Amino acid sequence: MVLKKILIGWASKDITPEKKVSLLGQFHVRISEKVNDPLTTTALALESEDGHEQAVMVSLDAAWAADTVMKLCRMKLKWDLPDFDPEKLLISATHTHTAPMSLCSVFPLPDPPGLGDEVMTVDEYDDFLSTRISEAVIEAWNNRKLGAVSWGRGHAVIGFNRRVSYFDGTTAMYGQTNKPEFSHLEDGEDHGVELLFTYDAEHQLTGMIVNVPCPSQCTEREWFVSADYWHETREEIRKRHGKELFILPQCSAAGDQAPRPMINRLADARMLKLKGYGDEYDPARRQDIADKLAAVIDEVLPLVAKDIRDQVEFGHVVSIIELLLRQVTDADLEHAKSQVAECSTRLIELKDSEPSSRDYSVAFKKRIFNQLVIDRYKEQQNGEIFLPVELHTLRLGDVAFCSNRFEYFVDYGMRLKARSKAIQTFIIQLAGNGSYLPTERAMQGGGYGAYVASTPIGPDGGQMIVETQVKDIDTLFREEHDQTIKMWR
Image (cartoon, rainbow, N blue to C red):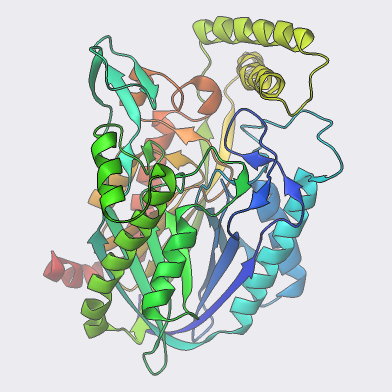
């Protein structure tokens, strides 16, 4: 792979809903009461000067990048941007739990009918969202100019493991740690922050990718529209480095991580208060994360400015792999049947309730959640069932980007980074319909995030993604550049 000059273009659009919406992220229905801060989509267009390689990376303030939205965008771009290959479009989400409902084809949890005309439907928002994303992609593509890049990494303690393990071998998502049965947190944590900076031809900073192994879930239970900690983070970075700066956030492998500690919460809250962030813990965490990420950028940016590249190796591989759906056991089936029966009884009892009420909407969604298990059990009686999964692997200089659609547990990200030939590897999760992809360790502990209904793919599939992307990275980092990589190692 030879060095090439790169065309770089940026654009950003507001994707805040224009009406009330149902917020995705909890089992109960939450109809937005206000807009706390705007939702944003940002697009970075890349093309080699000779036109032989291209990519557009897009980030959304959303829970996931639904396949329906991706398909709509690719259809629009096929006609409106004929010189761009829509299959080279990569859309990922920050995983805020205060963005509009969007359905996942393998994990569908629709709201009960009858929420009212004042509430924007899923189809309405998906159409609005796909239009805005397409506009951002077109604008970024048309803004392409010769530019340069640099890259680096730092560390910030932002994400914490949220799966609590007990002495009896069980695990609970957000389980209690202040009781005698508590043993340990299930998995490790990743505090790396991967950064890629873009510049114009005169080496003036134009934008950055900020890749963090932590979902944006500080204020995940609220009833307002919000980008969560990425709102404060964008504001803080722009305050320090320019208000016109483009910032593209990415969530690295973090399916078992959250932006709040499971241990020493009171001590953490006290320190946030002493920092002057206020008495409310969750908003204080948002600002603390913003300050931490801005500080990492302040540290890394002047260092990597010593190594700005006007020419880089650029490659983009898209792989479609077939992953075997996780098998439903007889025990899984019986548990699901009992849950469906219980929820059905509850819905009869609540038949006169408002569809948006907590009790009714929880029973409605949990019945669907468990019916998925029953349906999958019936399907697997006819043979193995596979899920096609799209993976993007990019090379930009010494850096690799690897995307997948799942809430990918941190172990997988560590495995991929450790075996990557790239000096620096950015993992991008939630680049598609989101659902948990647990590790072997999580499967043994059980609990939400490892339960069969929320995990259509098991650990074998998670490892197959690692193996596929290690191979794709090997393809992009050929033998003639091994000495360069060895020099830094």
